Length: 230
Image 1 (cartoon, rainbow, N blue to C red):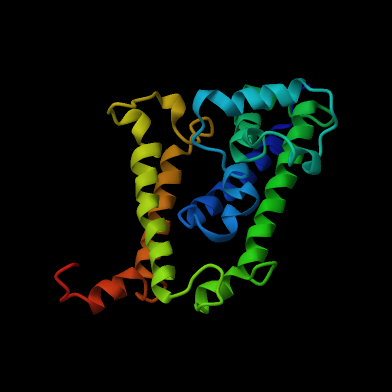
Image 2: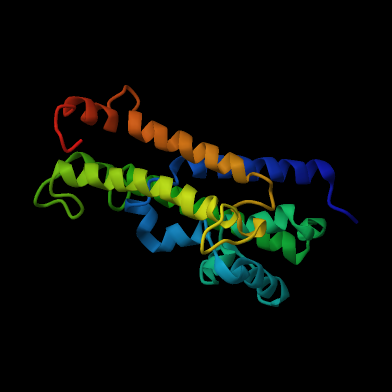
């Protein structure tokens, strides 16, 4: 039997909500996202050589039981959202029925992604490392930032690399150049949200630059507008 249309539609919407949230924080590529290989396990992309596809095929063909805990010990290529995308929007979506290997794998991926997200939030807001405190209270005893300039530099690098990611990786495959690829190499091309991802990344970069009350990098530039280096 085919999967119920209403159920599959709900799953696709849930996938979209998760990806929307991820695109808004993707530029922040330092801190808790770097722990436990989260920056590879959650959004394994870009991935050369169809590694997600191959890892997904291997996992579907295996006979071992599937759970979020077991998935954490599997290839990072099959642990996150790109693998979920292929299951939900690709040709395998017809197999998403209770009791199937595809459904069990998607359930495991969902649990794994949720665990990663909870860990990132906890580590930013008072968890094992309370990274927000490290950002706000710099000093010689701070394991991450000794000065406020170090914090500003980390955010500036994230802003710059966010733009680089869009230009080089998200548009690069179809924009020409020495490493020109194909449409199949674009992010989220299977789910049809390639341009949406880019738009949300740009929104995130703009928010990072402006700040919630025009107190982001734009405030620094205005305050030092007479500096010839700027």
